[in-house]
Image 1 (tube, rainbow, N blue to C red):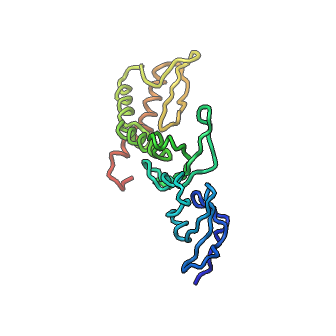
Image 2: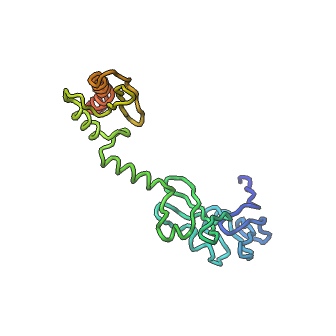
Image 3: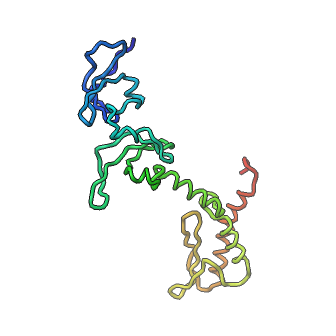
Length: 214
C-alpha cells in the first residue's frame, strides 16, 4: 500500500483538515472544521472529489459544483472586491477551457459572467469570420481597395499631401508601411499600387491556391 498523503492543514470548500481521525473506521477519515465552526469527518476520496465540502450547513454548498455557463464553482474564497458601498466575496470557478477565475456570486447567478472571457473572444472571432477576416485581414476590404486604386487616375487611397510632398502609405495585418514622399501625386500613386500588388496581391494569391501548395 502506498504511503498515505498528509492532508492536515489543507482546505476543501468550507472544510479545513485538522488531523487524521482517531475514531476507528474501515477507511481513512479526516477530522475537519467547517467555516461555521462544526467538526465533521470525511474520507480522503470525498474531500478530494469535492463530494464533501462542508458540514452540511449549506451556507456555501448549494453553489459549489454548480455550473453557470462555462464556469463551474469550486469554492468561496476569502478575497473580496468593492461592489457599490459594500465588499462582495469572490468565488473560485473553473472554466471549460481550463482557466481559473474569481467571480462575484451575483455575476454568476444573473448570467453576467458565463466564462473566463473565452466566450467573448470566441464571439469576436466568429464576428470577424462573418465579416470576411482571414489571418487578421478583411479580404473583402483589400479587394475593394485594390479595385478602387486600379484605375489610371492619381486619386488613390493611401496617398496624402503633407508638407509640400505627396506621401504614400499602406496598412496590412496591423502594420503600417511608409512608402516614401514624392514631388508629384502620380509617383506616390504608383508606389502605392506597387505595394498593393506586393502585399495584398500576394496574400490573395496564396488564399486562392489549394491547401498544401505554397
